[in-house]
Length: 405
Length: 86
Image 1 (spheres, one colour):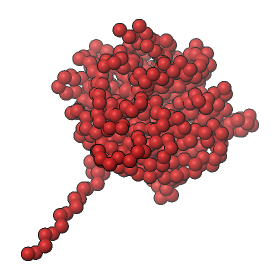
Image 2 (tube, helix red, strand yellow):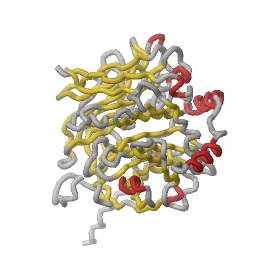
Image 3 (cartoon, chains in turn brown, orange):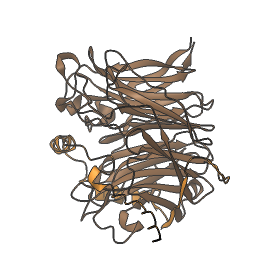
């Protein structure tokens, strides 16, 4: 039986993070050869020796400030065909609006950043009371796709966006002609990792309906269809760990994991307990994008603890890797990675918190990407609390894993 | 998603995306620019106490993941044509 092979499993120390850590940590990671770039609230870090040593890359000062200054949410990607690091940063609102920044650097000099900023007003001059929040990003053969929610100053959800930026233009560092699409019907659009000729993204559409969008690389048209999944509940999210310490008070049921391999697009999210699922669990739905049929529901569940906040990506063979949290019952939040092996998940714990979070809040997203150049393997982000419940006790995790026997 | 036209099957909705333009990127490639950018941002890293305040602010109620119930537009069905009077 195949098992998870943990090739690298590293907890970053205070020197790597500058203790610029928060418990809503949102870590992301990308790797190329011995070069690793990791982000989280509110730090970024780089290693050039496969994780033996780390250098703080301060998101507050590495690049010039914009809007109301660096805020929080970040995503890092590595695009191997063009040897390009991509770093997305969210800035705080100022005068009702903010920007997100797409910074990129060549693989052999990941400090030579170039960047372009995007604001709601760039898209529509009347959008003066609107700011971007909650990014996702994924690559296809020729484009960088980015999604964001948008809110007004009162904190009301306004709309969601999907952006499509040509990778050749980023590589050439030229002016950029890009495409963008927006909806007021669905939010928190989750992209599929592993896309080639078409990008897919999905959102819930009420009840048991999953709305799947598709955007071919060579088209200016965004299509969508709805698919019905089996019954699930969007709440409650509660899984107290040792001492009754909660960790799911902030969790909701938005889709946090997406992947595509061949004609199959899969999506993962956190669902509430139901018959046969005594704890909050990860609900999965795999859709054939040509027939629009639901083909599999690869749930991840436990009798005694909750699984939550998954992210996923396929390796070069189309095997789905996953990163997520497990907590409650006998354990504080633990970071877990693994892969889909036929009809089962093979998972391994990479680290277990010694404490639960103050206020019961944890999240909001993780990332799983294909390793470069070992594309049969994955790299995943995670974190735990070590030695206390304070934000200073957050220990980000870098995990490089594969399939072992 | 296939561009091939389908004559039957589940409903499929398509929308055109918009086109945007961004100027040539800014750069840190030149050492002088990098130094100036760092100088401009030198005051930018929050203190540990300021990060504590961020932690408290971020930990408040999470923003919604999409349209709330009162934001879902009312659905008004198309009415049947009035039957002609006999």
